[in-house]
Length: 272
Image (cartoon, helix red, strand yellow):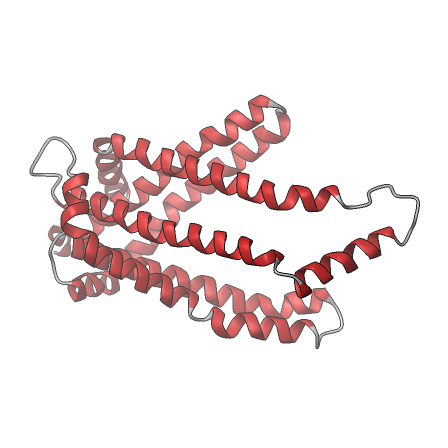
């Protein structure tokens, strides 16, 4: 496994310019998402009667909020905006994946990267697989969300409600993880012009090392995230904000390293 991680790191270093693109992509996405949430939430919180002398003021606030949500069209613009942002991400992310995975598969043919060529040549199958993957991941929520809503009104406390849902949520997380790994190998095959079913077969045959490699880098990423969170609690003001934004580069690095290591495991030469 250490050999795979080392090869993945070498591949990551060769794609350092892609790392910058991923960092800017995450940074801009986070900025617009923050501005959107701030635009929606701040005016609502400004109406909350914090410290109001009337004890029933908070109750009136929640009654007003419920009335506005249920009886007006205040949510329409918000939901349309969220849907537009989700659709934009569903379009841009597979394009980046197509270029990156194609560049991985042709890394031995040139000194540089072939991301732009990969976007032109491989975006259709990679995008189709990406959308199908997300559909399979979200499919259990069609049952889980109504089930959670019905359980909320049938159990005596929120604690019991959370305990009853915890096994289902964990099962959904495991399902999402397994689907992602399988489709990752299928996208590698699609970007390389290979059979998609062969990628699925490799994912099944190499499931244990694939899980081990993915969780190893995820563990390192969690450690870095905890270190960043601790530093943010100790530092305040501009330093904390700068550290938070700079950590997006670290997250992008781990994302790229994970994909590169998984690709090294996918390579046909590894099949012996």
